[in-house]
Length: 267
Image (cartoon, rainbow, N blue to C red; front, side):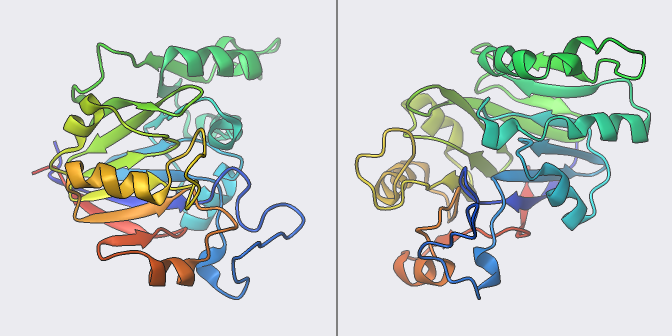
């Protein structure tokens, strides 16, 4: 098992991205390159093993931008389109690399939804040119808070509350990724204790009544218990200008940006 790894923030935007369609920048300065945000996703590598978390609508552009050609597996946070709409790109990866199937990890709700929308990826299409692409690896209560291994990469999944559905967070050594959360329960907090770096959904920003996303006060409160040294805010909307956030956030808190690289350790 590798002792160290690297994360690339493929995208840190919320469901609309920045700018939103129609070149809507909102409060974001279009002259600040770090305000250009694709939908939230990360690439994680340790040794010769690499995975991606979520395949949103910008999946192809993100891989091309970072010159990534292959992955060993996909981990999904949940089934919403801004995290899954690029799933079809796995066909190209599978055909180019010659792999039989791409292992995908998700909860049962996510697989049920994806099977309805991308059935040909699971069972194959009606022609030899469209074979099955995905090998399902279902995650549930029996796996949460327990280490799972893919090659040289070890990760611990945990359940998260997204208001309308469950999402899955992932811990890799002293790094953790929590997308699309409203809050975290005690078990998730216990799973996260000891991390040094936390990338977390902050799409609600300063909205105290957002029903599905965490706001800044919630993140501050949760991290008082978790104790991460550095917290990077992701799922950023057009209301969240990069330079403005740098001035507003307390010590130890930072806005993420597309292409950011983060080192982490398993020891």
